[in-house]
Image (cartoon, rainbow, N blue to C red; front, side, top):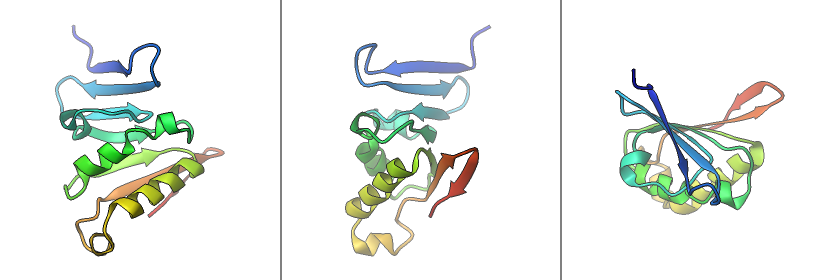
Length: 122
């Protein structure tokens, strides 16, 4: 029997840590800490979990945003409050003011976990 989940350690054992896990029979994936990925894999991502706000955990966000902007795809982002602030700043800088006010802005669900309590963002 083949496993249903296929984990891939991105960037090798000595590179910046990131883990990509995709399902076998469906086109769904989860990413733990961001990294540069090909568009095909980015389009499968449904959830991104980030442990802390260092640059090595944010390095692939711009590519994620570029690939998913304007598509009818929602990606749930989970991480500490300071990381989520950087996400909001990056989204604001990446999108033109006109795009932010229309439906072409990416739909995002952002949550930060603090003392077993999840708070939803915009």
